[in-house]
Length: 198
Image 1 (cartoon, rainbow, N blue to C red):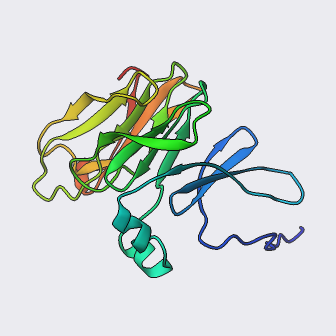
Image 2 (cartoon, rainbow, N blue to C red):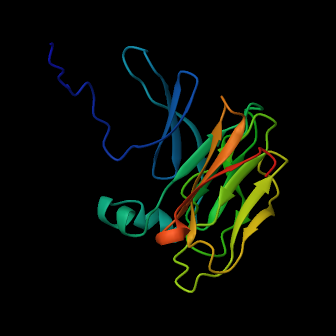
């Protein structure tokens, strides 16, 4: 039996991996979105687009400690078949139209700081679930956009005391469905299967 070993090929300080799209890997450094083609040698990162946060977040994003403490930067990203991209930053969902270079805020996060993930289905519908402390176990919403992330509406509401928050929504291309993962305690922890239109 052979033994496997892991070797460090490269290191990229302060880079956060966000999403794959074919052979392109997207990552961020602060509020700058970068990409590289996997397999290319040498590995080279190029800027795709930027988001201009409130002025004070430029200050907190400038050091590793404050960047982590206030959870700056991009936290989730999905690339649509149209070429548009939808991402989560603290306090907002931001959208980049095809060929654009600057993300624009299209939805203000009202509870919590941002969703943990953003999901797109083949018809271009984009989803995210609310992720906030929710100690009182208020109702929790799943939001949807049917216009490539430009406008958002509530697509589903979990009633009070049903769950604490949504951890993830995942598109399953083999079963053509959504998997919705919720938490945090006891019966709140669920793996739910839903159709792509909820």
